[in-house]
Image 1: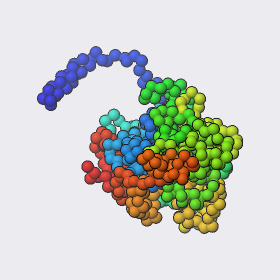
Image 2 (image 1 turned 180 degrees about the horizontal axis):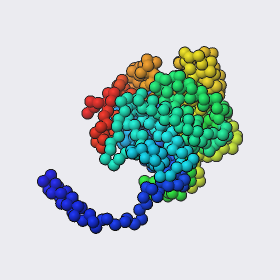
Image 3 (image 1 turned 90 degrees about the vertical axis):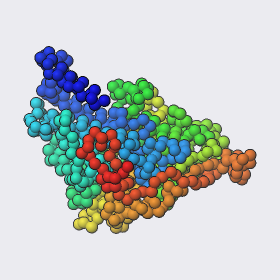
Image 4 (image 1 turned 90 degrees about the horizontal axis):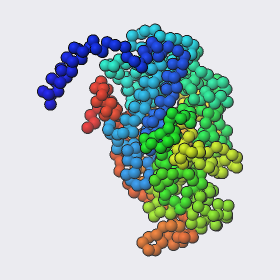
Length: 613
């Protein structure tokens, strides 16, 4: 093959050289860089493209088929989430992160990496063309106050995406400009180098005075922009992960003292994860869902902007409705094969601990329901006794788990924090009117809630941790107490301790992409035992399957005659998952995707993945 290929290439080279004069003519329909990067309108188009990169197919805040890579990888890797689904091999491409069975050829892993890189590239298009931060250090063709603002917004977004890559891959590339066509990016030495660069970039953006600032807690538009507040959040979080607690206190303290953010009231905590809370006082940054006619189809050719609404993730994060007696009214429009698919279940030991701590707090109710609440305090779409007595509901054949196979990998606690609310439930709304998460005409399995990437409660808890052992402990304690008071749990710390911060963060930010990164960080500093958390706990050796004795048969006779056909009663059985033991070192960070390593031989795995075959 080589003997044939080389002469062909040489012939093409000769042809190109001998005919070069025929190609020396002006190209029609092509705009030069000097003509394109030459106005505020051009900069605005690039800025819109940058934000759209988060929402485009396979983007950080959008869909990759039936999953969102960041949502699934970071949350399924945590100890308080089970992959669930229909059976032991369901949703295998991303359930492997729950069971540590992934490798460098995994598709969601590749999509996560590319999602970050696409956003970085979109940011660098702005920075390299409207500042001197390009390969030659050249002055931009055009500059103005507006292009300066665009550059600083791009700088903060680029910093955020680099931070997320560093927390996930430890030592990714730092790509600080557009690269030449034959230039490969250079890998960082370690995570600390990336995080220090992230902090410096955010500080540069803040000092510029060009970033948009939030005009008080009611300024919804600022939550969809790279603002001063978000730059402070990213710098503060990066500093906490780099153990620069004085730097973290500075930036997170400035964010808190700005007065631009407030915690959502307790009775509206649930709205933080639904359209009713989009852009509210607690949001620091969330890509904003828009009904944009330019986003008109997904990979299957269905005509609506549903990919931007994380299409079919709505199915994954809904209860497995095909195994239920009827579909609960809260998610009654869920469509697609089998309706809801039952992924992302709350791990029952954690749910039990959460319930003991929070009781019937607004925070707990917004996160998951107990068996009693799920069976009897919700409306069920097929039921005739939604307004009936408890006795009528207990004997109602149109509620509960009707399939003999039950709900796999699911205990008696029913997560719904990120579930699509077609009808916001009365148990949360208390009779008030709120918008549904799903817009008319976009299909029942689409979620138009903004994808939240930073909220004020996380900033407060990061700040509280940064204040431990410092002269600012009282301020840190107040930050912790503010989150505790809002939760409605009734538990208020009297002193600032890491244990209280760790527990509060797990309750507050469950399924929000924080837990896994935090566990790794705490473990590396001796504040968490990952072997105990993942291996000794047996969470993968005791996978529940939930059945309803009302419908449960054992052969031709009911297994629970006292309940069969008379009263709903949920029962559990247990099995073992297919899983790998969590390996300290290797499973603390992700391997670089195989395709990326092939394209860039300078990129090498670290921390346990170097010798992986």
